[in-house]
Length: 147
Image 1 (cartoon, rainbow, N blue to C red):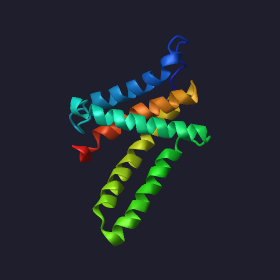
Image 2 (image 1 turned 90 degrees about the vertical axis):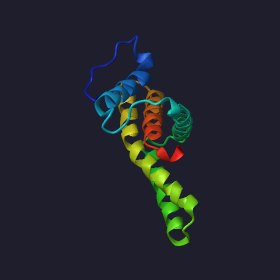
Image 3 (image 1 turned 180 degrees about the vertical axis):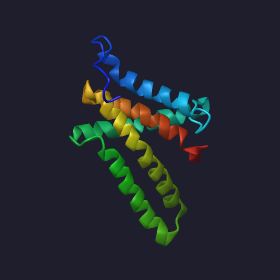
Image 4 (image 1 turned 180 degrees about the horizontal axis):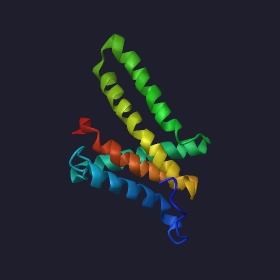
């Protein structure tokens, strides 16, 4: 995806949706039954919530002029802090938060790559929206804790 030619000027406005859509379609078609990433209607609310949270976090990072990859770093640090609190105290809430943040950190890393691919020929906002779409799908699929 990094070596693809530039998009036609008419398609440049929807670059954010094309890049994330093509990569998600490739995931669904290749890993559908093996990993279980096929779309499920009951998970749409989780996808929408994660989409809003990730997009707002990326908008805040853009406002602070911080790079896109700092979002997985922040979630990793928060996960380590939850682990530091959970280990001596044993409070279950921090244990669950640690698990959610650990999974989110692992899934935000490829999402940052998707954002980089989308922003390569477009704007930063294209990359942010593509990252938010991809992250909302993969985090929503791999978070069985909500169901």
